[in-house]
Image (cartoon, rainbow, N blue to C red; front, side):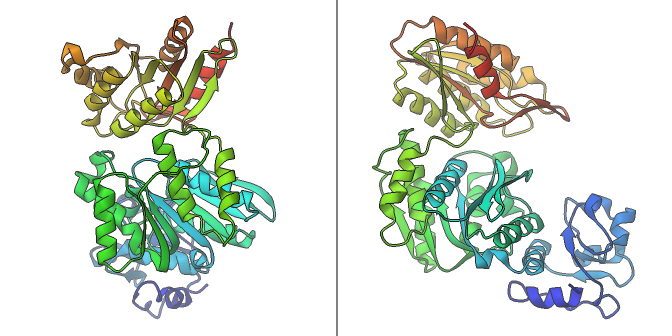
Length: 477
């Protein structure tokens, strides 16, 4: 597609300037802010991520630059497409390049602090049970079942950048997919990665402190989430759980703006394999956003009854040698999520609760002592270990967690607390405690990494799976 044609096709989503005559007829086949992916037919997106590479040879070979006025002087002669909002323009152009795929699909966006992965997988399960050609984009990557069978893609982000999202949606559409569930993260919304997408339905699960190292405070975190609903098509289905004060505020804001909101005042009342209260809210949101045809609700409820768990979300593993012992793998990595995961393990019948967890490095430090205090108050045994330390000193992260426990009064501390930095050794110690428990039912919660298949130490990604390690140890007599 010629640049001039691409700009014309994007005008419905964003008002864009015309290209200068001497490069308007340049062909454009891709958009990217990554100089490693730039070719002579690439529209180079100049943003905070790419600005450090403007002098690279690849950047100068690009078909054109999409940039702010302040960067135009660094572009090759007469090759700058100057806009007021790079993210908005990039989203509109990416959508146009791929034929505006989101407008031809039933695209459902799910946002909230917790529950996005589970809700989107519940949606996928419901649609497949109804014989829909359905897909998903989220933390675990992209997956769909179309005319070619099952297709899986790695995405790198919970919510990919606009060029990648539109390319995936276009591929799904070409493969016969009609319904797509997408996890929409607050970071993606704040950075404009979803610009150009149009959602036929959107759901909001909850909001609690997390990612504040990125957003700064809860108000800006909330405002980022709010942007999803500005991307909904007219008459889109919008559902909000009555889970916390932020849900109530979102409802008020959207109603004030004229949106028709489905207010989920109570959690799902049907059968679930993991019937924890927060999972019932997830199910209620999935059912509300599924866009069912008349007469399909019964089949959708049966699908939810058969839904086991999204990978790494309340994923239960029974000890093959001891009927009174079980392990739960969960991605909980915020105070609210950790508390709900512990409560869920109790609801599964655990009279004794053992928790193994840590916190990620180079992320919100304020939540570490809060999580330590919660675990010490609610569990019977706690083992504090490493998560993804990244570039922080692991012992310092663990110390932050333990500080929260030290600040509690002695009468508030229920748990026996240990510190074992090595995560594998911590899991081994947790399973040893599990197997020596005399309780009628004992549960071990391994929290923080969930589905992840790696541990990030410095700039290394070392293979590590909580699930694999737990299964390996449990298989031993």
